[in-house]
Image (cartoon, one colour):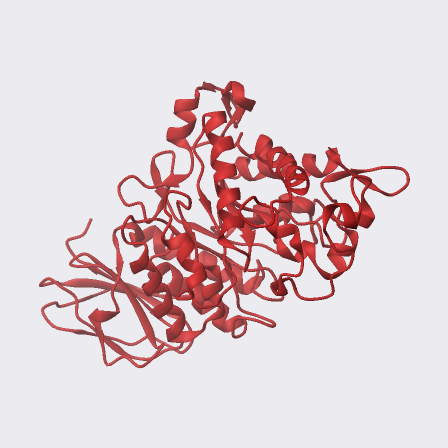
Amino acid sequence: MRFQWIAGVTLAAACLGPVAQPCGARDFNEQRLQPWEEDPRYWQYGGEPVLLLGGSGQDNLFNHPGLPPDGLEAHLDLLVSVGGNYVRNTMSSRDEGNLWPHHRNEDGFYDLTRFDEEYWQRLRSFLALTAEREVFVQIEIFDRFDYAREPWDANPFNPRNNINYSAEEIGLPEEIRTHPGQRENPFFRTVPELEDNAELLSYQEAFAAKLLSITLEYDHVLYCISNETSESEHWSSHWAEFVRRHAREAGVGVEVTEMWDSWDLAHPMHRHTFDNPELYSFVDASQNNHQVGQRHWDNLQAARELIAEPPRPLNNVKIYGGVPHGGGLLEGTHKLWRNVLGGVAAARFHRPPAGPGLGEEAQAHLRAMRLLTTCFDTFAAEPANHLLSERTENEAYCAANPGRQYAVYFTDGGSVLLNPEGPGPFRVRWLEIENGGWTDEETVVGGQPLRLSPPGEGQWVVLVEHEGLN
């Protein structure tokens, strides 16, 4: 299935690929990335279910055309070669070599009524490259880290950097030295329900409208309003409605979420996403990936229950596991398996140093996950730790399509009993995750619990299938 784009609001669409074929807005909406009709907890593209897996070396990939060591295209090719199809893209400009979205005049001041064409061309090129490779993109419109400390010193919205307003006129500070979680910047309180700063909001909306004029042409894009926000729900609601309104005017469907800052999915701030499916058609649970071990799994399962009706996809665009967050690199790899067997729709390793990125460990685990999911139907499975006994905390995790298939992941060797339904016999084979190889298949009788013990230490997953399964 090739990605599609629609040219502006005319809805004259063409399919990206070797041969361009006309396709109308209806076809575009039928083919686009959206919750799966048969089970809306997962994504579909082209009408077929798709599991999103990924990792990348940067969060704002579009703004790193010279991404080391071999460039953006090579980075995306590497991702695809190991089974990845999902990246995060913040509209951020705070890294060395990044561009800001607005035009800068000869005197070094920005004009918020004009845009920097190279910045936006980078975005267009990035979307085209991901479309060609069938890599799905989750965009974050506002990254709070661009609006505090050193990045705020260089930001075009900072009053001392533009020709459009002064600090006194617009109500923004010229200097912010606190962490953005301290909410010192009124930039995130412009909407009518908060401080009603109409002038500043007009510039913000111009930026967002420019973004959408490009991204709404593509059918492989998801939208997240903010990165780790702790701001008012009114801010998030305004922008979710803004994205949806522009999509309606363009005649296309969109999927929108928000990413809240709290590491605890039970925190009240997350309820705004959980409780408003008309605004947020999927949930991003990335901050749960600050949790480790059994708690990581348990909190994820609680979140799945909260969005069970109506069911929606649960994404994890950031799997932490490095410095300073997430319990270290090894724990970061564990989280990929707990997420997927735990029923998420999308999982991506966070960039270094806070996550595995697309390093060697991430590559090995993505390869192994695709080896498993080629054989194991994750879309038909449910988390099923209740089928395991003699299990210690964080030892093993199970997903099952009872009577047909069972996958059990071991974090570091161990031994458990699996109670499969049905008389058997069952086919059993082991996948050594870090080396990416299957053991020979063996057949075991059914009608009793199966003792499962990995052939060695380290991370393993076992696939147990009813022998009558085709």
